[in-house]
Length: 85
Image (cartoon, rainbow, N blue to C red):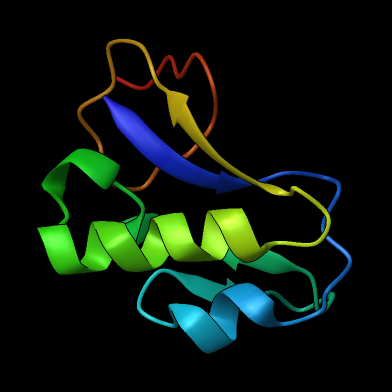
């Protein structure tokens, strides 16, 4: 399964949230993150995928990734190599 993730390179510029607030938000530390309920790239419609890709390409810090999560069916987890059951 592929999920959207914001890595540690985030500089909190807000570009991703401006482009795609359906998937990206700021956490309590004012760092962008992918909303866990909405970060499953494979379940997104084409329009939303396009917005995520636009945010990924427009991120000045290259902080947005689409990562493969192994053997994970939960919509809450967004870690690489998830071991959720």
